[in-house]
Length: 148
Image (tube, rainbow, N blue to C red):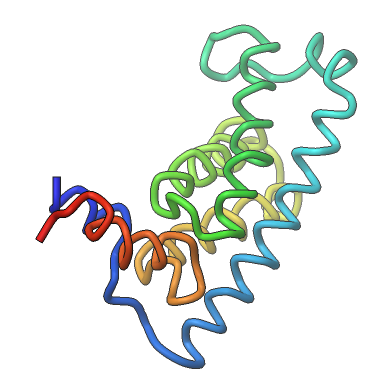
């Protein structure tokens, strides 16, 4: 249990300016992606009939998964909550958009999905930083669960 907590909520985080930079990137890239998802959510009934279905799950389910990756995961990403777990659907969504949905389009038309995907992959490795819910949980959860 202790190892799982260390993986999900790392206590050793970059300090100072680097953590502030990570916070800035989380806010910027989380909110910008969230706006795309909120647009999809507000037009759900219209989009659900024509939304691409690259995984063969129906257009409605594919749209729901895209909205989950772009809204719910982005919100958790901004706060640094379950950071590395929520980045997985975000990276996957942008990968599907880049490689499958817009795969045959010119690079200029799929460039935004590529930028998001690469940014999220890069941000996966350092973790959420010191100014995050995960950092706070990592410091306090072992005390609450009485894990040494």
